[in-house]
Image (cartoon, rainbow over all chains, first blue to last red; front, top):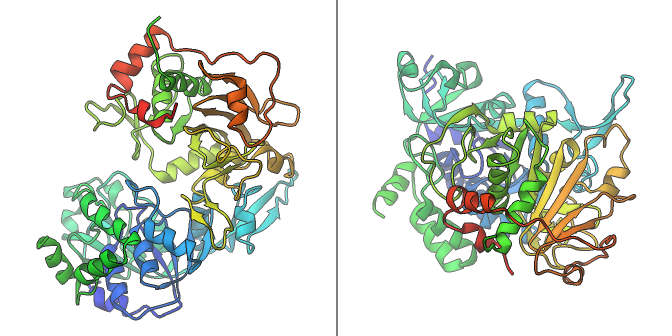
Length: 282
Length: 253
């Protein structure tokens, strides 16, 4: 099984109006090479599902997002993603904002092919009023407790980034937290895994235990080697967050000229390798 | 007794919110809550579990604001296990609040109309689930009528009036334990769970607190002063927990 493909081929499967899930968390281990490729395309009206970071900020800044399903959008060292903030305050996106745990439950429900999963979280809060599609159910047992029926968040396509993978789509995280990347893959019809480095299957345990093989090949349709592909988010132990670059990016939300310059230098490029060359030239 | 600062008093007040918590996960969000939780762990509440702020449980206590020097890891706590832990109830979180009202409703989501907010804030994050599943406390470093408001714009963390509208089963794990600000300590142990002034920090009057609060607080009799740090607590704060004095930068007056 050789599932190796390219960013261009993978992103060519996307159509305007699709629902896409993006793995990682905040400004951590995000499939940024994929995000950059999406920005090169004429795609619009996407529904983006994410524990949001600069993936969301960039897609909002370039007008690719119709609806956002999220619990927060943060750059971690900069608590609020400034381009996301701008999009929200201009009213340009439809915001389906929910509790972080409910969000997990929505992905998990989709992964398990259930219409919903029950949870206490959300009751009594404005999550229920700002997301008017949310409904409650009552336990059919003696307790009769009312619970939120968190609906399945079904994805057309999921993109995740891992430290290592083999060409069959087995994926390995070597950092501290697997986040919810496996659920993104299980909730999606098509699943693409980018990785820092492709290794032969027999070398997968050279750098981590078998428990770090969070994705198995049945959960992945395409694999792409994208060294430094999570830049400027962190991807430990391969690299830390590029804080200087992130500060530069964040500052462009308040300065139209700086944004145009940033866009010309780092986004209006023909390929990921051109991006990596632009970085090297900094 | 040695001289102490307002930040030291706040650290003790934060630590006191974790008294009696025992062997549960304590999640202090923000610098002063972290300082207070570490103080509790090193003094009267040694059993609490604290993370390194990433995905591991740390058995020892390391200073705030510095890379870990000699971490002793005692467990793994990625986000997925944090959610499991919080839904199971064995957790006490101290969060921030951009707005908080008399019943303990907290807003960290947005100011103004949610559809097109004047200011987008952090987002709901875990507040809705935290407040329905386990004890939640709040830390406010800048007590003012803009924070302590009559009514929050968006309810992220659920307060007592909202919880009262739920069935007894749905609200059975709801508890807003305490609010600690730079001026005083507050709880909701009143007949209808309105916010009560528990203590004022040294140098602060009850009138100061009321003037800086956008609703009428419950004040019962003579309000005591907040507990001041012992010499042992001061040396823990200065030598082991926050030698850089970062806590002083978080407090206004």
